[in-house]
Length: 223
Ligand code: DC
Image 1 (tube, helix red, strand yellow):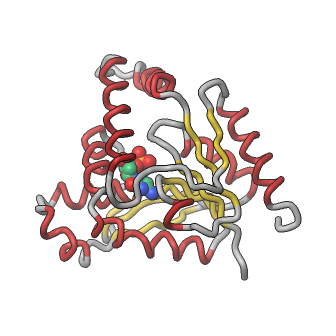
Image 2 (cartoon, rainbow, N blue to C red):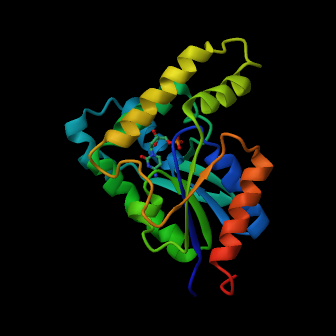
């Protein structure tokens, strides 16, 4: 069976995962958050104290996988569900660093391809439209200004007692953007045939509606 693949790329904090989840539930597709794979690899590397030169070899035994439980993605290292453990600022920064290592990208490449071969997916990440699914039916590049992304993150965190100052969040976002866009292997960039959606002035509903509209237009007759 031919599957339909939608690629959504963009910088950290653009709302990719929330919006892609909304779109996938509207369309009945599986939502694949590939950042979780990079975070799980970073967790594995950090917890085991693996030096860069040993990463390629040790990943052979890492057994990082995605499982879809009631349509919701969970990420595993071996048989341990690490979906919650990977959501810390330390792992965000570690993932940004280790995802630049070619051996890490090569290791996760086939995992991502296989899911897309077997399912209708909305897959989000940094290099989905450019490298992982170059033949995706629809490619979206989702972005928003760094200030607006920091603002959203600050609002999310401000309910917690240890919320960092806005300036620190903005600095973190700018640093991650720089790392993701300037690495040698698969840097974050808009694919030539991707459609740019800037959500600086849009709320979540408006962003999801815009993407559903683009997908319907591009896949007319296919879905
Ligand atoms: O989307 P995220 O913040 O969960 O991603 C964590 C890190 O993983 C991010 O800094 C960039 C990297 N990443 C990547 O290089 N390629 C992907 N397809 C997804 C994420």
